[in-house]
Structures are given as structure tokens and as C-alpha cells.
Length: 84
Image (tube, rainbow, N blue to C red; front, top):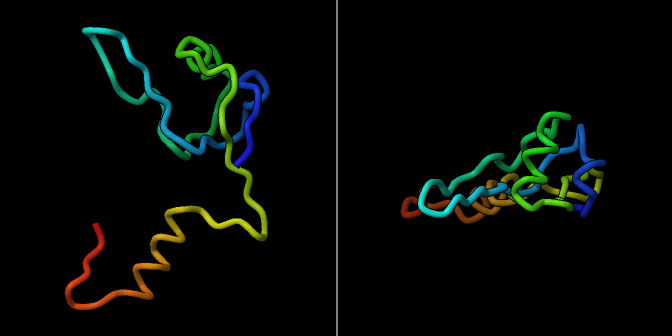
């Protein structure tokens, strides 16, 4: 994970959901974790106050949190444990 200027993030993958809040009207994600940022996404990100965002950088020594959770589940799995 690395912080990057939003204007330089085209083609990168978001590490977290980005939420938009319009008081009394709307509250919800405009982009979900894992979304690959496109040129047309930049103005939207800037409009919700995201001048900098965290992007996912994959390397040999990195493990995505969902993959880590799946590994932990497999290690501790029993008849009383079920994935959610």
C-alpha cells in the first residue's frame, strides 16, 4: 500500500472503498476496494476530497488481506467455523 496523488493514480488499484456523503441525500461508496482508477474517475475522487489516495502495490513479499483471511480460515477451520 502506498499513498499517491490522485492525479497520478490512473491505472492503479484502490486499497479501500471511497465513500461519498451528501448530507440528507446520500452516503455510500463511489468506488470499491480493488477498483482500477480510470482518467474519468479522477474528478470524482477530487470532488469527494481525495487529493491523495492509497493504492495497492503488489510484490513478492505482499499478501492481499482477503488472501490472508482465506489462509487463516483454512488453518483454523473446523466443524464449528464457517466463512462469512
